[in-house]
Image (cartoon, rainbow, N blue to C red):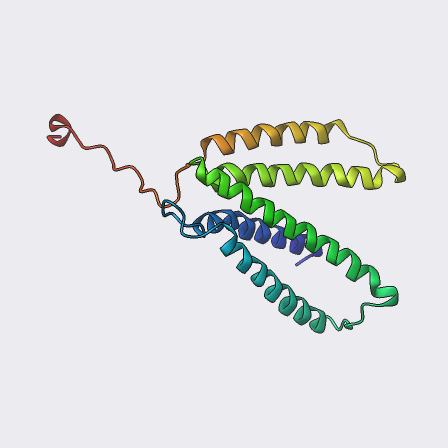
Amino acid sequence: MSERSLAILFAVLTAFFWGVYGPALGNARSSAKPPEWSAFKPYLFIGVAYLVWACLGGAAAMKGMGDNFSFSGKYYPAMKWGFLAGSLGAFGALTLTFAVMNAGRAGSGPGLVMPIVFGGAVTVTAITQYLMFKSKGAHFDPKMGIGMALIAVGIVLVAKFTPHGAHGAKPAAPPVATTAESAK
């Protein structure tokens, strides 16, 4: 399998994991009125899970690739940028928790929040990459702008037409057949 194919495979797996992350986070909140716990009780264990999986998975992958465990000198950027990236991810999980909590209170939940998060993230990534490479001659291609506009339309359509409901709400019962319909 080529490196490009592996990159796409892992990107699809990430989309899967993060795509079900929002609904799982929505399920982590209390459906009781008033809630029996805050949205941050499960968030604490999101942090524990990140720590466990990042440390164990990262260490195993480093060992498997023959890497060393030094983070000083020429290896310092790995620690510095890794900590920054991890902090950005953690702040994203924190703000996502606030978003899902408030959307849930409004009767929407992850179906509203996740399209905004992921469509917005794609756009922020494109703008960040453009700004990073602008000094090296990168230019803003109008097709990228068209893509961003399509993402905005997609966000609205997906968020509007994704089924929404309060956590713990039962799906609507199917319509009862009338006497004329049941006779068929």
